Amino acid sequence: MRVKNLLTATISVLTSTLLASTTWAQENLGSLETIGKPVDGLMGWQPPVTEVARDIQSYDTFLLWVITIISLFVTALLLICAFRYSAKRNPNPASFTHHTGIEIAWTLIPVVILLCLIPPSLTLLFKQMEIPEADVTIKATGNQWYWSHEYVDHEFGFDSFMLDRADLEEYGYAADEYLLATDAAVVVPVNKTIVVQVTGADVIHAWTIPAFGVKQDAVPGRLAELWFKAEKEGIYFGQCSELCGKDHSFMPITVKVVSQDKYDAWLDGAIKEYAGIPRVVHVADANMNKVLEVEASKKLINF
Image (cartoon, rainbow, N blue to C red; front, side, top):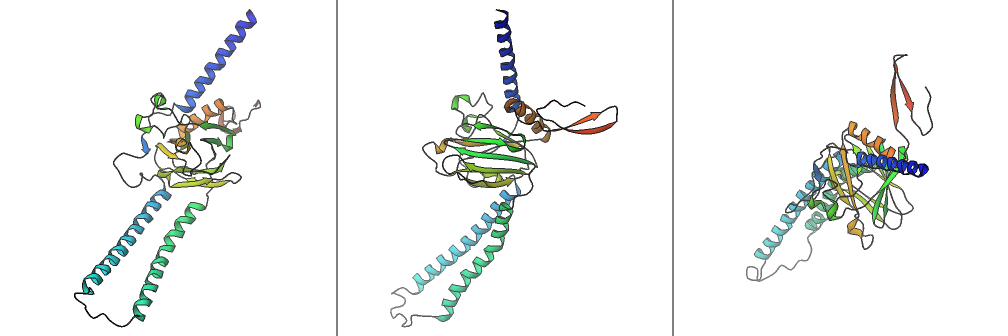
């Protein structure tokens, strides 16, 4: 009986510790503004919070102006031709069939326009594809139909499943965030370079966060990379952007961008919860009056 009671008490303590760490790791991040989500009745892009996202939207606006000018010009030509050369106003049509100057113009002008579009396009492409040195590295694996996220430097990970409508309030989400919110969010520090390694476990998926300006296919057997540096704290949503099966619409992505202090606290809680490798800790040595850098590990460290 005494052994049974001891075992029951031990299980109770472990369960309480696990639940506490889960709460700490997933919930104790303070109040965060939801920024990156679609809003009923609005059109256009989500608010950009990375340099790449701003550049994408600026280039899109530039292309819109170019396309608008071309469309208006062509429309004007059509109207002029329809009015000026109608059968009523021009009963005797011209007998020639070619005009060298016009043919050269309508060949060279589109070439010049395309040449003008190439430099900003390539600049943006290289900015997206040249991966900088990471402050935090995360591996995202697409599954049918949920995402697995692994914090590579600390060797722990978790699965992120879409929340049911009834569970949104419990996890701190609004009712209109159904189909967007997950039970376990990716947490990253603000103003830090985050590199996400993307792959698929079964079929092709795509890891996408519109407010960050990132979208990368998750191809089984391949490891692709994307990066972002979020400049504003908040909650951001994305979804799988490749048709991957019957529950394609039900594998969202939730990213919480927090301050460095909150991220460090969350990381410590997550490491305990998921049995990861502790981060590097700086410990003050009062006797030597200096700071010792200690790399924590699962082994016992004696000073």
